[in-house]
Image (cartoon, rainbow, N blue to C red; front, side, top):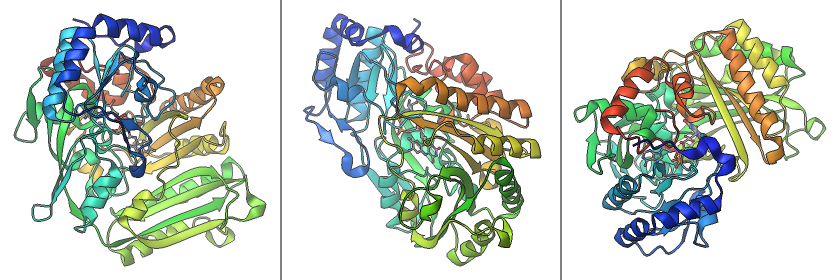
Length: 506
Ligand SMILES: Cc1cc2nc3c(=O)[nH]c(=O)nc-3n(C[C@H](O)[C@H](O)[C@H](O)COP(=O)(O)OP(=O)(O)OC[C@H]3O[C@@H](n4cnc5c(N)ncnc54)[C@H](O)[C@@H]3O)c2cc1C
């Protein structure tokens, strides 16, 4: 049975179509609703940075008032109309959702934190399995592990582990879901020191397309374990994840230093200095330059408001004294002749560092984020990056240079689905805007930037978590590179009917 999501045909699929499909499967959906635990009473999650309301135990269809709320995801560009959104609260409930998908022929889009930039946690004509209400976290400080349910956010996991002086590499926004982030690879401030989020995954339990709960780990279904680390959503619904934890100091050193720039030449010369410093930086040091407009805020010079700046965000995950020493040269880019416009350098609790950028990206705005992994950050690529940084189409757009290397390169490209193990940096072209009329301008800018970087060379794939919104096999080859072949074979073994193919990539 083919379960091609109609997402590619999004213009033509509206609420009435979704309602008609739901009506055709009314019996199966109401049986599912009766089988789920929970009374469907709405639960607001604003306190954890999640703007969503969840309906644990409910199956929401287009006939329900809650449908418009239930179909919403963080990325407003993913404006799709699922046939139903089911909110299981247990692994058994998840198995019932899978069984319903098999009976009805509907494809499943899995949602945990709802922050997919790629837009795959919804889809036209699919059955959404939203496990956001499954939120348990347990830390075992002796074994240095954390066991989490799939609805846990990065902020919730950080809070639980740092209580014991421990952490695991996760992303840099506390409101994002741990599960989607980890199963898409997952880069963060601790990645150069300890690897990608998926590298610290000790095991994951999934409900597979057969409706069975299986464990994927180094010694249990290793083929599945290899695939889910980077391509997770295409192989099943994760219902429990176990992470290895590492020690983090009570306070870590960080800096957020903004340099004035007047055009691409200025940006390029600062990036060249950054490149040289990064080569020598210790693994614990994670420094990421990006561009922004100077805000009209306390701490920034009034007369520079609106000007372009190159911002350098640095975090050192190890000893804070060593961290301050390691970050100092990055805060002094440009030498004596350049005075930073803003320089926030401090020791902060790890959870505060993790929250530093949190909440910056409003839910419901439109996002298209496209990355390219760069093996050698050549002069040509530095110049291209500088050119794109100096000519942003809108105030919400940016280019981020994300450092790789260190522990990320300890694994081989074929060890997980994420192929970019030898990258020096990742260039992330991040377009963010709010008016649908501007979609083409922003998407084209980010897409063209990535294409030009590929033309300039030394590029090996994209980060799955920052891979645009393209669907289909070509997009998958771009993301997974040489891993695409064995991922397809693994997919054929675990999901031969394509129950979990909302992205249409694998
Ligand atoms: C503000 C912001 C900051 C970000 N920062 C970072 C960062 O620092 N580093 C980084 O790597 N990424 C980052 N991302 C990208 C983010 O990691 C991905 O978009 C990720 O998919 C979000 O996970 P989620 O659970 O919130 O999303 P969801 O929308 O719930 O899920 C996204 C996808 O993950 C998969 N998935 C989710 N839950 C499950 C499950 N239970 N079982 C199987 N598959 C599942 C599915 O494929 C799903 O389509 C950021 C995103 C945002 C919005």
